Length: 208
Image 1: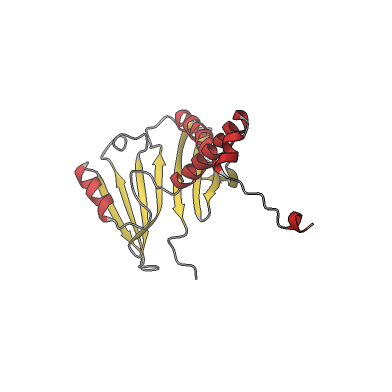
Image 2: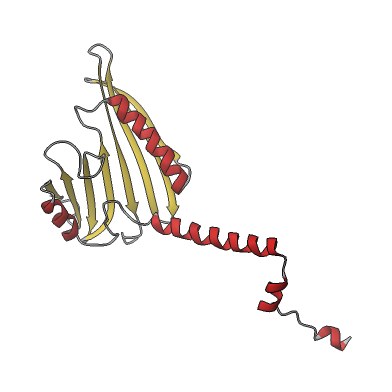
């Protein structure tokens, strides 16, 4: 009985070598999948355009200057800690991208949100809506299924304005949002569409 109490099972490398090949192969696959899932989660932390969370505006401003893009800087009296930098080409799309403009938001000089805007006044609304749905499906494969956030439809003097929003939180405190806005006027046949992909890292902003 004493010998039984003192019996210990030690899992050594020798025991692993004696395991059936299929079992060892499955163990390797599980480790590989876990590693890649972790890598995907880390990718979700990164904003687009080679920006980094928490960095200062100088990097974005330098890139915009090198590409000869228009830059706007907004600081409101309501919250002077918040700075919004907009970047857009004089015409067409951003360099090597399908977007028409981007906005970066900084809190106390630290990047916490990047909005990438698609669609312009001259853009084909059907193409914009189709690209929105296509991008939503592609991002869902990488980051997880999007949840509906908000849906509105209002009549205005210009026509009927419709908007729909979705979000996913692949990493705690980091959100990806897709917001589509359409404006239609049945009488004139006017139809425009725009959407934004918003990367937001709420962990940068101190909690109150």
